[in-house]
Amino acid sequence: MATLSVGVLISGRGTNLQALIDGCTDRSLPAEIVLVVSNVRGAAGLSLATAAGIPTCVVDHKGFENRPAFEVALTQALEKAGVNFVCLAGFMRLLTPTFVDRWYDRLINIHPSLLPSFPGLNTHQRAIDAGVRFAGCTVHYVRTEMDSGPIITQAAVGIRPNDTADTLAARVLEAEHVCYLSALRLIAEGRTLVDGNVVAIDSASAPTEAVINPIAN
Ligand code: GRF
Image (tube, rainbow, N blue to C red; front, side, top):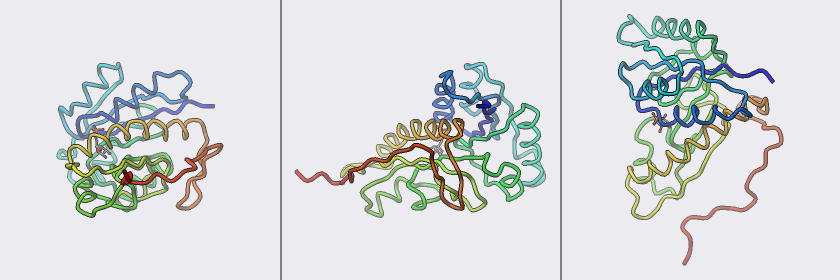
């Protein structure tokens, strides 16, 4: 199996990046992070990459006249590093159809909700306000509509009666780290097949029992 040469795009603290970095140290995972790109100078995640010996670069969107020009520079940086697969990990820029097409089915994202519920920002507070019993996260292939695309992995996290957006976000974030690595492994091992909006996963099983929240005492 050919090893994926992964580029990770970030804008901030980089805890998902760190989870991917840690996961890729496992030799049984046919994926190597060859470049980390941030659109924000000084993003904390850049130091995490450097500490792991991974090349980094900054492509600051503010330095470009428009979104397409910014994305051309992004793709150039990725291609120069030999990237053939891209993970968005807290990358806070919307992507145009041109970029999405260039990396079609080679571009995945993690979002902190159970998509298609709660795309966009402020997902945890919105989930609490909506009174849903489960929050969670989703790793999906990227399509042009924001936070849409075929779903690879999801984790459900029960919402507790006294949760705030912050307490919930902390539990979801832990699940994100597991979920993102798991999705990358499935793809790197060639176990995913995208068919329209559905991702078939070779030899995957699912929990057999329903998870119910709240737990009746
Ligand atoms: C995560 O919650 C991710 O789901 C969202 O942005 C956040 C990035 O966090 N897309 P980090 O930079 O990976 O810590």
